[in-house]
Image (tube, rainbow, N blue to C red):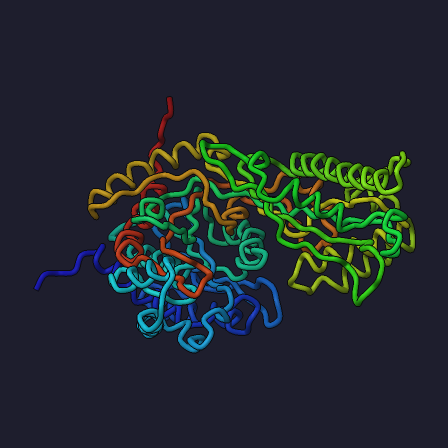
Length: 550
């Protein structure tokens, strides 16, 4: 009988552990999420390495009630150089599985049930593709299997392969964090704790590999990749204040809905507002929420409308976004008022006075408040801080601040409604980033040849991810603008001093339709190629040999 190779062992272990971890539910904010780290700790504690080194396997507190925790597992070799392998274990809800919700976290039975469901009814084009994928045997379903427990399994398989080496050079620190699907509190709490962990074990952290999943709608060409950066995300809001009037006298006031409609028209999916860098283009902004802020029926025009947008970036910073958003909102406000004045003039058959409006940032609004008003606003923020809907929390605080300031319309308050995910890219790391890229280029070529496939660099990981907070120190100026213009402190990133900084990339599984009912992972790449790629990448980055660049 042929002896199983290290690569084959890692593939077998990765598949088995991926399926096992998927069977441990861990929906964000649930007791199952809080229990997951202990399940994984207990599993690793039974392995030979951590049986011998129990002090190198532990959990640290993150957040929540019940308390969620991050798992930390250190595999020691020689020297201080250390690579961190990181991934999250929380998942989105299983509600969209409907009648199959009971099977959502049991990959193989779920896959068969989905095949039976699809075969048993008419299918649209997208569902036809899903069925073809499942019937090929190359794809497996399961909530969180793709996003991203199979990434965690690849990291653990690489860790186990590392400790099985005769004389490994350097160290691997594996971490599994909660809460990526909400506001990355798991990664942010780990980031804050990492300096103490490094001091405790005398580690020099030189690189990080995030293990998150990507998607490819074709043959995997876009999924078999090492991502050099992760997209930035802003959530600008516009709180529109009109001047209400009875519906029978529409020109005696200004409808907030009219202004809001023009803002949406000026922002939503407008290609000229998309960001471009590294040879790639981000999607344009989209409107995530548009609502009339009142309860019940009234025969008056709307006086307050709330708008929130998702604006992804490849290069723009907070000041750029806030300034650009102000220009767009100011133009839309004036356009709405000019149109209303023109309608009014035609209706009454003669000229009318020009209607004026104002745009204020949230920071400018707060600057108008003093004493008791500020205290009341801070108390409101504290009372709402446990909420998980950032837009609802922000909307209530802005409404209260505008009332305290006595703002009359037409006016628009702008700011940021939820946590900002910073754009990150390997080029920000300078020489260390260039060294990392050079070494990974060689690893990609060797791994692709060994497995008879292709692997490439991609510039920007398209989904927001923990990578935004992994190995990166926030810019103080950026943090200040965001904090001043984000209504709730709960949705700002208050990073302590002394954080570690090291270059990071993303190397993870690929599949299709994550977060959806048809979420599925591409098994051949994820269980066979990925653990090998992660291991070889970590070993290459641990090499202490100097490297020069032209």
